Length: 99
Image (cartoon, rainbow, N blue to C red):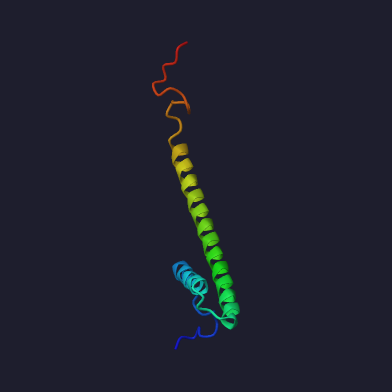
């Protein structure tokens, strides 16, 4: 077996898997399939899954922001390289303003 055994947590579920499990828990509770002894454990599991989903959403938002910022920097650099074309920013495209 791999030498990493025990050095990392068991693989956490994907966002989709966590959301599916949350739906299953909710359905069981709504349908009354859960007795009071199981309820506490299911609520705890649901709370952990909600926390996991929030972390995954926050991580995805940060990645999107990082990528967006990088794309904006690249676009600004490309626009900056194209400066000196003689057309002022926001000016008329033909450069023949009335005097």
